[in-house]
Image 1 (spheres, rainbow, N blue to C red):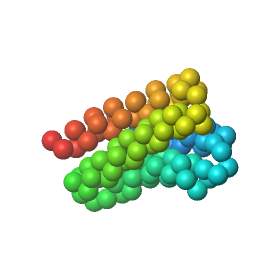
Image 2 (spheres, helix red, strand yellow; image 1 turned 90 degrees about the vertical axis):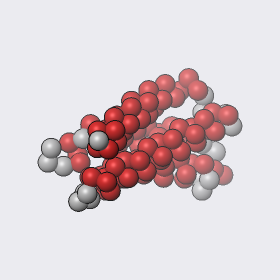
Image 3 (cartoon, rainbow, N blue to C red; image 1 turned 45 degrees about the vertical axis):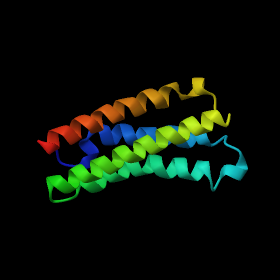
Image 4 (tube, rainbow, N blue to C red; image 1 turned 60 degrees about the vertical axis):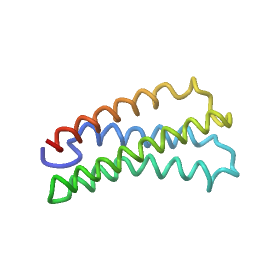
Length: 117
């Protein structure tokens, strides 16, 4: 592997950012600096932390950044549920992003476990 760009988990997390931006585009305008902004930031944080951790010189640091990415993923999942509860989006419209986030979660968990051995 030559780059973090080769990591499938990074590629999938970048794809998920695109889905988050598309789904949040229809949120109420008064949420621009609230839930919309927070949701976008947490989704971007996932791929960003995977990339930054990859660039670290020590496995322990890389693992820590992967844990931060996982935390951002959980944050994003929570914010999507809040958006459903507030009826900004319908749960039926979340199928693709939910499936992708679960896949990313599993990949991050596996990578963290392998690096922690």
